[in-house]
Length: 470
Image 1 (tube, one colour):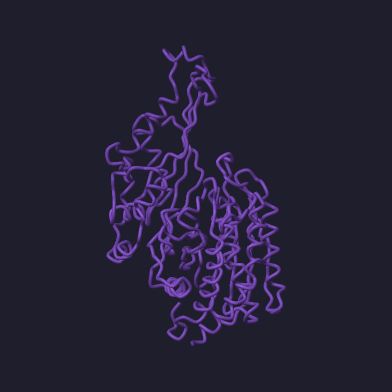
Image 2 (cartoon, helix red, strand yellow):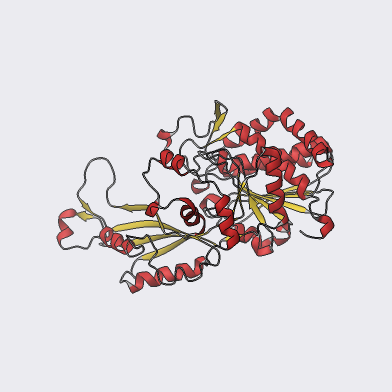
């Protein structure tokens, strides 16, 4: 038995012994409705996360640590730092805010009840992102209980605005670059696929989130006036129709694909070993086929490497019960563009505005709600190899290592601006229902996730140090 295996055995026993306590921590945090978009429960959640981290700093190992709420122009960042024996530093990035729970009537259990049924915990934010945050706090606790110290320096950054675009996180990063210095980062999310195999992501897409506002008359009118008064809803629909080719779905904005790089041979190899349960996903979503009928390698390539143009919402006129014959005075659409490496959200924004002007829709207002750059980590980075190796040790099979997630996060601001490689892995599952009713995680996945984080800290603390590599 190796020294690593011996220490892992000691730590895993502590995790098993404290299982109920860690589940309790997660339930406590999930019962706080920390909805950033509605400014609900935010201070309470930030203070609760701080209390968990302060308890680690004052633990029996007397290894110390610092915990603080760092103010921003929005909600605060909870920051903590704990010393360790290795020269390495590992950063955990998470967030304590959650999506709104609507529509409440579709939940089988109270969205902030954190109830456990048949081994599954249901709560808004339990998968995105409180389960991962608590799993990492619990892993630090277990390491200190089992070993009396941490094997490396550990930092926590838990923000409160990820679900609204991390609006003020760049401000935190610019003002406190020293707090973000690390040799590797474990990013916020991760899931098992339909076959139960862990997914490991080496990057995120960027995003441009905008709202288009088209205005007509100064007030809503009787719809009889539609014979002579322009309808902004029609005009907005016509403008939206210029954005994508209806046959291929290709974005029609000039220059949109100019900076897109094709997948490398290494990227294609990672896609080839990636399992994507097409039939299970179609059955779960009740759809007959994917966009353009793609399957196999083409589907995986499109999911991971293709930028998107998506309509998130359309609003105009009367939408209440029954009928109301009205000519609306304003129409709005919310769009998100998921961007791949080398695409610049600021450049795409300028191209969108020029596209609207060129097609005669320059009067449509474009409101910016979120801009984030894409980010990517090389698979040969020490932190990536450490996560893959420890995942195989903890879960008993090699994980799917993917070049990127199809989703977005502020990985560029937190990590890649400073040259820190980041890997995303977590405790969710194929049907965790992030951002949807009945969000959930399996309790066993949560416990396994704690063990994985402890294993990664032990392994990353020493991997390749004798080679002088990161």
